Image (tube, rainbow, N blue to C red; front, side):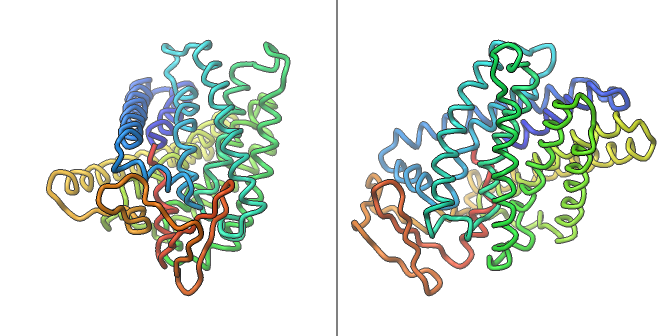
Length: 373
């Protein structure tokens, strides 16, 4: 749903901006409805897994896993993005403000859990950072944009926007440093689709900065420039699309970060009002559209072959935590050590000591499954 939601924001921005307004509201509506549908289906499937004894263990292990735990940001990120991407004729300010409160609570609760492990957990700290870590910081910036659009400082007397922006930027910087220092150690990370998540926070920050200054300031241009350079850099790694995805949603990280950059490009073209800036805006709009359609067809084809034709399609969660005999969550020993590429990784989460078997290529695979919601 993140891919559809991000695309809806991009087309809404295009429809409301002078030089791209000819696209109309139809693409915005299509992407927004697609995002709502995907979020609903994902929520129902998650509830079904939680209520099924033989599948409940998957949710528990995903919650505890050092990388897959970040996928739990998906629901509130999707809700926030769908609020931002709601077509103008359907906007409800009361609903958007209610969503802001709920998503803020989810963001704070999850962020405290994640950032605690960044500081104190050897197995899930910044020394092992991967692109999924960035899902915990994008929410701050998206909520900042929503707070600014809803004028919450004026109406509620509290500057959520600027505060959330500060938190998001600081933790984005920390995650980015950890990620760049660690990526070369991870097999298969060179052209992982999840690497495109690096673009998203910087691109959303452009919208934040523009909302503060009511114009495309120097800081917004700097963030936009970083996003452009990272897009070129990541495209130069020849990211895959033909190979069968290792998990459902493998290629969706290509979509919403580029959509966020497309929104920033349209804003920049409107502010600069030059032919060169407008060309850049159109180029990124077209590029994102090509990526969106390609990923949609590739993932749909994989989904059909796996669930309709019986083609092999495994999730690393199954190989990392095999379920035996249809039991509920497999009961690990109180303290268990599992060999992982010559070193065991023990995760201390809450008061219970857990272990996670990370196979040589599991980390890279976990980094690309970021669209569960």
